[in-house]
Structure formats: structure tokens, C-alpha cells
Length: 153
Image (cartoon, rainbow, N blue to C red):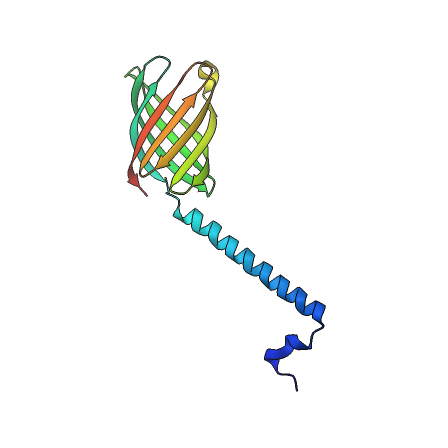
């Protein structure tokens, strides 16, 4: 009588080879999924409040800047910025930044439309070790945001 643990020996060779190949493929997929999940889990979570400043390399203007990062999913954050221009004029806007993780460094990029007066802005940023640096550019201005993570979630 064939024992249950030896059921595969009763199968034709092609079926047995196919099952072996399938099991190897499933094992490889499980390994790949584990590596992807481990990489995602190890990346820094940027959620929470950030504080620092901005400076325009075009005009030299600068001011305080605060931001709140909300993780939308594994690939993006909504960032709500608020700050001051000319020391008096407050501004607020939001942008969705898309994430590309590289080890302990999180790279982000995105675009936002700030109305007809200011137009489109493009952002390229790097976050690592509790600091966030973003280069911004538009048709009228370019500069940098520098923030530190003050209150992680």
C-alpha cells in the first residue's frame, strides 16, 4: 500500500518534475516578497511634524517653514507646508511626494500648482536620519527647504 508521504513517487516523471519546478518557483516568490517587505519596513517613516526653513537661491528671500507629513501608502506622502514670506505673509499649501527608497535614505519627488501668480513647482527631496532637504524649482524661483523631524508619530 502507498503511504501518504510517498504519494509523489506514484506520479509520472513529468508531473513530478513540474511539481518540483512549481515548488521552487513558489519558494523564490516567497523569498522575493519577504525581501521587498523587509526593505519597505526598514525605510524611515517620515510621518509627523517637521520644522525648519526655506531659502530662495534666486532672490535670497528666506523664512520659517513647518510641515506635516502624512503617509498615504508605501509609495507616497501628503505634505502640508506652512511658512512665511517677507516675514509677514503667511502661506500654506499641500503636495503629494512620491517615494523612492534607497536603503536608509528616502528620496521623494512631486509637483504642485500654486496658482497663476506662482505657477508649477517641482520638488526633489532626500530624507535620512531625521532631516529633510528639498530642492524646489519653478519658472520664477528656485531654492531649498531644510527641515528636521521634531515630533514623529
